[in-house]
Length: 262
Image (cartoon, rainbow, N blue to C red):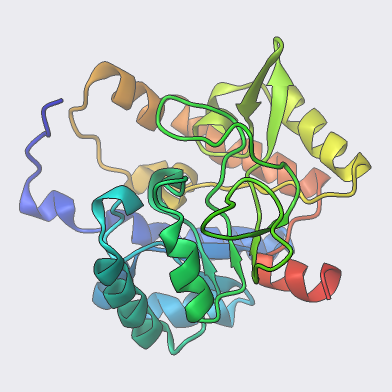
């Protein structure tokens, strides 16, 4: 794969210009959210911390530079975790691995998160995709450990919130947001949420800021498959998400743990 050349001005995080729009949308929808933030964005734009937490939302760790766990060493991860803690005043208690890159080979991150008194992780997708997935993983929240990332470990301290999945045409696949929100019709996603509700488990859902504010998303040349995943139906993401938060009650991980797991 050829990495495209991007001009210096295009490297600037333009999508943060949409943060006020997103926060206002959440306010109008009376919805709390968890913002998994890449640390370098906080370094260059520290004001967004107060905007997020001041709006009643939670901030959580998404590494410093959005590197997959399999390209980081344990020391790298500890250094980034410490830096993120400095940037957020120790407010972060949750983690999501970029590209859902937590797996059997990178489970060591759970040990480190435990040492730093993190409460939860949400990096497991219980279905196999081209880029990620642990298809044998449980679909409801469970205690996760480095040696047992797919099922409950009663001795573990970190709670795993796996992404929502469902079966479509007999195949288990993710439907918890992102590209799947843009690609799939609304009905199978809504049906999956209702099924999770019937089974008394939370439907863990995600959306990227740039999907909600495509007007700030720069277009760069990418191989066809990557371009399709990145840009397909971008204009439909916000209307679909708006419909979902009107039909269903969403909250942040922090509030869910506090109100439903204690």
